View 1 (cartoon, chains in turn orange, green):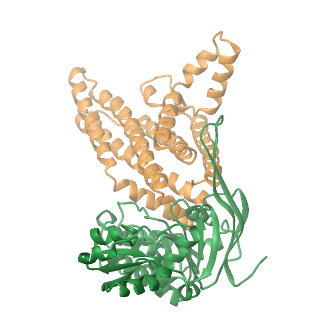
View 2: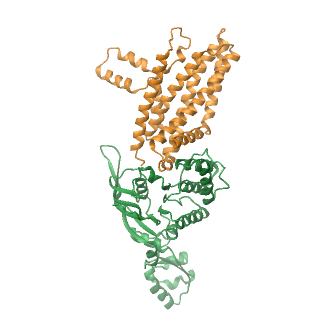
View 3: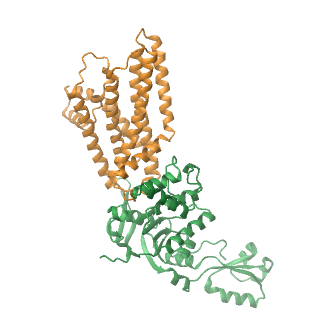
Length: 258
Length: 316
């Protein structure tokens, strides 16, 4: 456990000190500016604009930091072979991978939570509104989505043979993971068996990122968010992450560092 | 077989790489039936040209690659065993470290992977920084380090777990003469402390001064294993360069080095031809200005083993 936490701490420190966090600051400023701009056009709904755009900005920033971190660390760990010096130590490959996942997740959580605090401040102090419980719920669901995507991205790192490949796989998964509803709709249509079979495989393997999407329903009066929904979201996020982590771990164990 | 006096046992190791498309795969045999033993507290040098299979051997030893056939035992165990990895140190060629950390932070991280914590970790890091002469620059970011400093932090991370066996892949790569000497001194010091050294290198001077025994790998095959002391005492022919006065060039008419003498003021000669040639020069009343060995005994031995000739200018 000690080594695992040291890997996580090292990863966190490596990422927080890297310049990619400036990009997060820029995106934070851009989204806030955009919210201000749009709030001028709104009629008494300023806090809603801040809330909606803020949640989109939080997801966007988290994803941006994830993708950039995956690209940068693939370069250092695999292309520059920094991983060699760690794996020859008495550290298991499972500890290494889990430590990386924790380090990544910590930095992305920090990005999302700190941006959430900024958005909350804007809603209260400038928009004159209240930060409802649903905003907090949406943030937690967003963090669950990031846990799934972080584990998936790092599993791709263990499988992929190039930085570009890892980034493309991750972006493709993020895009398709948000299109699960469309895939389900396609499956209900009259299509050839081959197409349906492909769609079923895609539906089975892809993460259902819409399961964590509360931001689009934050003002939905029909939204029910009880114990069952929370349990399902947590179970799905952790179960999916666990399986993906195992796949990544097996790949790292078998990986040939040619 | 288990022999407690052996630090490394390699038996019948072969490695084949397949590259290219599945319709026309290209097969490269990086290692061919390599068998080798390295004794405890021994400094062993694995010599070879680029692409000879040295790095592949180390990668298999450390578990980064699976062999096509054969087996490796490190400290009488398997590298997959954490207790074995606790006892080894590894320095890769041109090691890369996260540029966002200081030298001390890096050593603390690598030390913690060896289960050091708290006071023990700080004490160990200070000790290693002292050993690799990096105490002063320990709190500077790695991004500002020179190649030599990076290499010293590299050796530091390899030593932080008090390794019984230190495996280094081209440890002198990219070092300037001062860095090279410092690194060599560290190896000599480690040898005195009883650490088993396994060095992949093609720098002959390093081998002569540090290693007890060498193996020569060429085209994936282990061509020879010999004691350095025996090689240095052997009658391996060393090539020489004989300096003469260029104005004496006309006296060389009929001799094979006439053109080189006129152009460069000297000529290259094989060791076994030296006495006879000097006698001829004496007969013709030609004075030599100096005679220099073009290669060390070790280099000559290496070149002879792999069947190559010394790269010398203006071979006469």
